[in-house]
Image (cartoon, rainbow, N blue to C red; front, side, top):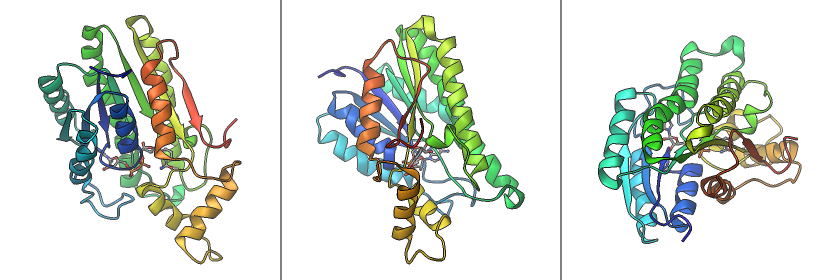
Length: 272
Ligand SMILES: NC(=O)c1ccc[n+]([C@@H]2O[C@H](COP(=O)([O-])OP(=O)(O)OC[C@H]3O[C@@H](n4cnc5c(N)ncnc54)[C@H](O)[C@@H]3O)[C@@H](O)[C@H]2O)c1
């Protein structure tokens, strides 16, 4: 298998796109470190609770990875906290001795007009989506340099390519991830480390459980109708994207040495 003997660390890997990417890389032969958190220290998140149970979900996801015959380590870490990120990398290296692929998939989304946006909501969005990505790279890059190479894959978004009303913080955070990706790619280009980003369109995950409520208009009879209206208006192909689509691009980045600094859309034609 193409990724046999390789190790992937996937943040926010308990559910949604992160779990989908972890399963794709595991099917290709990689052993997996799943990182997630049970608690997000702010009520301003799409789960409407601080108890998000990501680590509990990651323990379940680990069973599916083990069933594929791969080794898996599940860690609880909040990627916005440097000590926890450092400990996460230390434990991963103690178990597997290396990290070949870092998938910065963690993320939170919110919807508020700027003039009504709580400061905490701005801070949490930037902390998780931008600072979390920076901290995970800061912790893993020295190891990749020592190993002689690696691949970093960041989850950006179509919201990192164009603005969206009531999503200024989320869009700003994802534009930042695209800029960070491109900059770090240049910084590490001579060290056999590639850095790329995946920009999903619309994938049914906890984010869209929240967004289909947030974007619901009076004429929508249900959240499902609101979700379909978003797909119809935003995605030219008229269909949603899947976690497997994101896994396929992650696998491409994981196996390609000469593509770096790119932020590739998987969005059914939304962004040119
Ligand atoms: N679903 C979509 O349509 C879509 C579109 C564009 C981009 N994205 C991006 O894809 C990524 C995955 O999102 P998803 O849709 O699977 O959402 P999700 O909410 O299902 O998954 C996000 C995961 O990140 C974890 N997480 C959040 N904050 C964390 C922290 N501080 N530390 C550790 N883990 C943390 C959550 O517990 C959760 O398991 C995100 O970066 C998101 O912005 C998603």
